[in-house]
Image 1 (tube, rainbow, N blue to C red):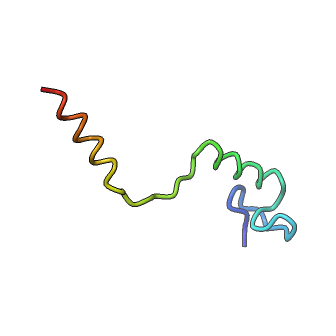
Image 2 (cartoon, rainbow, N blue to C red):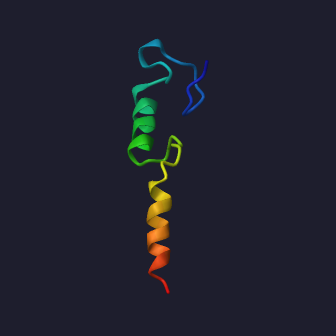
Length: 57
């Protein structure tokens, strides 16, 4: 297994990373929202768009 950040071999202490630095890089990416988890639409977004469109006439 290799580190997902730098591709070096994994160190058990920092698994799945090779070092604290790579673990911190990954955490920073989550904080900056570089990674996202797709979520299903709830329908609320459609209602907001319809309300915004109705006022454009």
